[in-house]
Image (cartoon, rainbow, N blue to C red):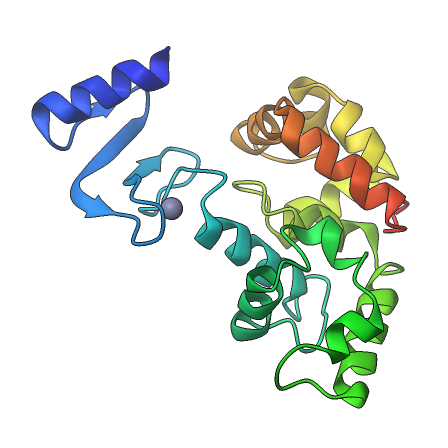
Length: 204
Ligand SMILES: [Zn+2]
């Protein structure tokens, strides 16, 4: 409701602010056509459509980055190739890809397929804070993810905690609220479950 009111305001007045949100008067996402937006939680102009193909790819690239799950080879062009070929649509699906499927991609050979597969397998055992950071929850950087995993001992416990308890672990109120908000979305909750099933380490 608040979101749609915000949109109506934006349509009527070009750029405007309602409920901490503002909509760019002219800039739209080149991939899905949604108008760019910024919020208190995510202050940079961005496409707010969670199903936007560009957003899905960006989240997968973030997951693979050296400071996150550190999956060598998971750069933007390769992730685009994986998504384009239908092998993976989100980070959990990366862990279902078989070596033979990777090797069959244009430009891939057996060795590079094996290397990427091993990098994925290795990433399952990484520190839990990396996967929490890898989920790309607004305002949750490496410092926040580390503090929360240290305090709560597992990613499950972080998501089970209320905003008040999260804040007591030493993160800002806005960060705590952002985590609770993110986890209130059923798609995100399912993603966390699928990552657990995929063998990702949740224990700090
Ligand atoms: Zn978009």
